[in-house]
Each structure stands twice: as C-alpha cells, then as structure tokens.
Amino acid sequence: MIRYDLVCGDGHGFDAWFRSASDFDQQAERGLLSCAVCGSAEVRKALMAPALTAGRSGAAMEAAPPEAGSSAVPLVSGRDEKLRGLLRELKAHIQSTSEDVGDRFPEVARQMHAEEIEHRPIRGRATAQEAKALLDEGVPVCPLPTFPDDEN
Image (cartoon, rainbow, N blue to C red; front, side, top):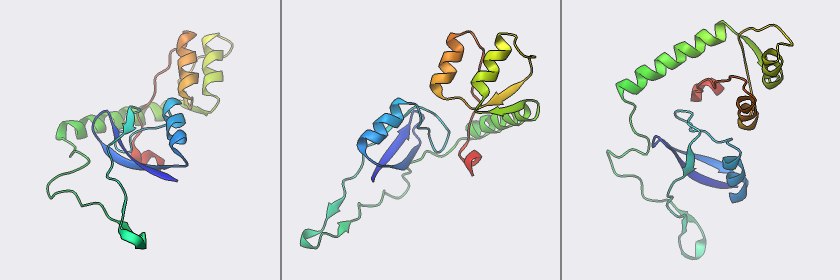
C-alpha cells in the first residue's frame, strides 16, 4: 500500500491510500478520484515529506509538524459555505422530484431520448465514460454535486 498526499484544483489537501503507484494513475485516468472536501474531480499528487528512518533501528521518524497558523486545507469562506448550502438545496429538490433509477441511468436515459418510454425526471449513476457517451449521443445529462458527508 502507498499513501499519497493529494490536492484538488481548489487547493484542498487530503490523503488517500492506493495498492500501488500504477493504481493511483489508473484511477486518476478513469476519473474515479474526487476531492474529499469539495468533490472536485480535478485531483493531483501534492508534494510530500519523505519518510525517513532513524539509523540502524529502522524506526520511521515523523516529519516535522506544520508551522502554527498554517493549514493544508484552506478555511472555507462565507461565500463558499453559502454556495454549498445552495447546491445542497438544489440537490435535495432534484432528489425529491425525480425517480432514482440507479445504475440503469444510461439505459433509461437513452430509452427516454429515443421516445421508447415516457419522459420523466430521473437521476442515477453513470461512469464518466457513460455520461460522455450519452452527451455525444445528444442525451442531455448533468451531474449532481457530491459532498464528503454524502457517503457517510
């Protein structure tokens, strides 16, 4: 297992464990990584302090703690908090007024687009590749924002 310090496009820092370096690369390439703070899919490796050993004992030494007042994760501004609140309200409205078709989302969306079944508000899950294919076919789709506590 390997631990990486990661950072999103908005500067939020977090760490994650992977089976190998290539496992991180594969997940990043497939669009499976997202920020643990804001859900952004723009995630990259951050600079990391090396793990050092203390002489012959082989015991790992801890990296120096960050200086007081510094933060790996920027504090959330009032504007960001308000935007998050609005996005949560929008997501709650969509969830209360649409049918969850789960993993069948691409199939059901295509059937509605082809007028094989009645049009209705739906939501569900699709991979990044499935969503791109739907858009390429002219099927309108839009991702819902995800928040770290959605998974808990």
